[in-house]
Image (cartoon, rainbow, N blue to C red; front, side, top):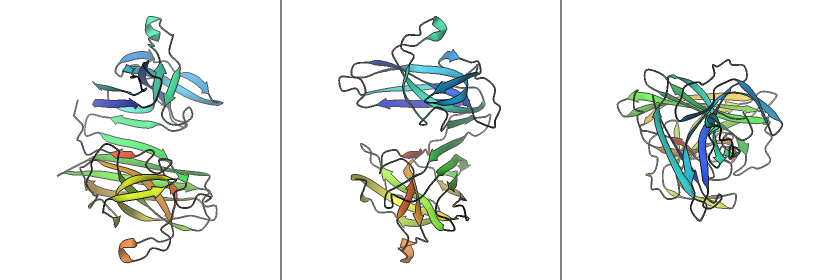
Length: 304
């Protein structure tokens, strides 16, 4: 399968060279083989225990992809594209200081200064490559905020997949999960769509579920203003006496690029039907408004 990744830094160390790549992990409760073949240059392919930030995780390999050079403002980008072996990979992307080539004996500058997934092994990007149509698998955390900032939540997350469906459509599935939220409560789950800075997108007039809004306009939360491109709700998540609950959504969506933050709102919210009671967002992905957008890509992956 063809694998493409773009790294972007803004406001990092000026006039500096970094090494960009990925570390591969074994999720808890799973057994995976060391990643001895991938792309780029190999950092390591043996199974080992890594400890960082008081957390231990099983690393099954590391591969570096390219060099990223920053300008005088600390801005820089790096693109990498290659064919990778079939398999399922659990990844945290890393940006390391300097030129790092452990296989060549160059270990200076191998310290990871930026990474995805929060703490070590906390959240993985899942890359699935097989001999047929590729299915993207992703996961992101939910945190309190937007309208209600003090709602209880022990853990929240969304897992979603995106695959080919043909005829200009993609199959999109999303699984929402709450633990330790408000007991015996019904929430409305969905997504708000945004226009990333520096780009122009159309209002999201077709997706799946029921429409919250499809007009473009500015939205202000957390002291931040972002350009909203629409909103769609997917269904109702009901919690038990412990505040735990789950909801799954499956739909065919247009094969377009979407930039979104997942939202969970209190009560039954149907703005298009005039029901606005319970529309306050209590949980959301991406941190602050527009801080981190999940991208659903409508581009068809190239086959190996």
